[in-house]
Length: 375
Ligand SMILES: *Cc1c(COP(=O)(O)O)cnc(C)c1O
Image (tube, protein in one colour):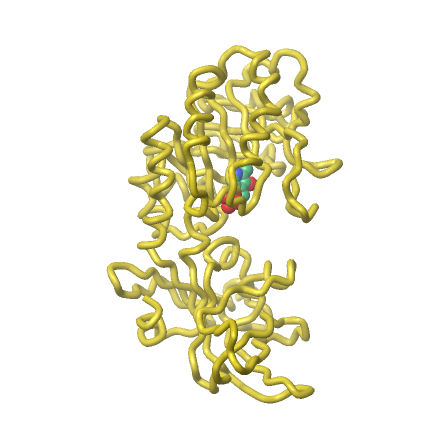
């Protein structure tokens, strides 16, 4: 695939989604589905690409969404098929009737939200997002269980019966985990609460686990079987990054090359504005062409006006020349959806890599920029 990428992707910069990798990422989830009868939803906020949703449709039990727009797009693509789960701190009274008509399950984020909106509409299953108050993220900005959190009902508040009408519970407290310990510990913490109540209709275990990187899924298989036997009729998993993270590439072209204070700088035709997390968290994304023990190094910089618009310093056997194509790996999740046209640069073109060939889905152009900004 790599050799082909270099030659056949015409637009630059371009976001390329490898559908074979997406299919491979589904395998561990299919195993869990088949071994336990649990249901798998794709959390579409990671990459809400319509062709991806359509391709996933036969393989998942539904979609998990966080807003009216996501719910609308998911339901247009799923039709009547599959479940649509929603949770958000930002449920709006003026949208609620439409949201409730589209969604099969809503997990209210707070008791106040449930009390205000829970009876506004019918035809969906009511749940609560709960906050187990068990932290796993080193960075507070990624920790739903931080002090004074806005995400979910503190389980310490649920000492009595669950509020009337609540049929299910949901939690989501992890990100990019490659081991199951956080999930198992969270389930342990919830056990007293689950024991106190009659069997739930459903329990949604959230996302945050990279299933394809977890060596042994049998403990999870056993845990899900036990939940289904004791605590909840249906168990849902809602991965986002696990399906698309390692399937996404950002290809770019070197536009300029010069030395700055003694180091080579390569200016690329992309920028951190196409993957803002790089800047937010000062990450260095993996580059296919990097040679870890290479003889020389260069700073890869974006083309925006921001001084800190830099991907990092990378090692090479020889410094890439102007016009050469490079590509970043493992950038399929939370990249394109957060990308902007800052400085008036187009968004990356979007390709699916399918049956050994790239298929161009869209190329951003001046008309898109113009429409966004007013004419
Ligand atoms: C973002 C999110 C997910 C998906 O998270 P990943 O880390 O991409 O797997 C699932 N559930 C909820 C409630 C989320 O907010």
